[in-house]
Image (cartoon, rainbow, N blue to C red; front, side, top):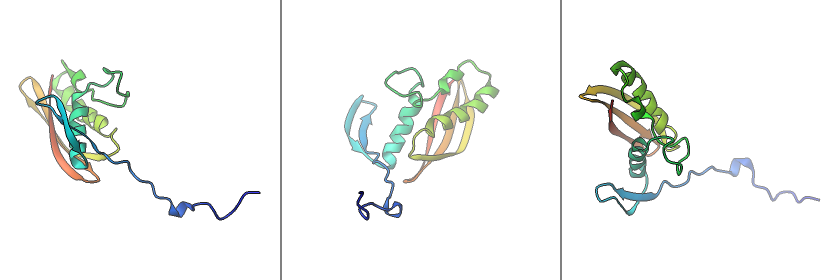
Length: 133
């Protein structure tokens, strides 16, 4: 005999997102100093994702990091078409990021400069990354 009435109905359940609180990284001094949350944590995650080569570090899952620098030596046309896709693919693995918009890729000497807008639930911000090719 199973008691009835002691169950929570599905209309009463609410899925909560885990907090994005993390350590603040001071990249100049190569130290962790304090904590950050919200859009600042997402901004730091974007920088960290794009500066980490995917598949190079066993500590990270295969979904973490970027393959942007693997375009080294490619023709400018291939770099322009692939760089935006690879950046989006890397960043959209993070559940806090809803979309990447306003992607612009320009040639800059020996590299390509990609600028874009990161849209999150907490707001949006502009970001850029320079990739040597």
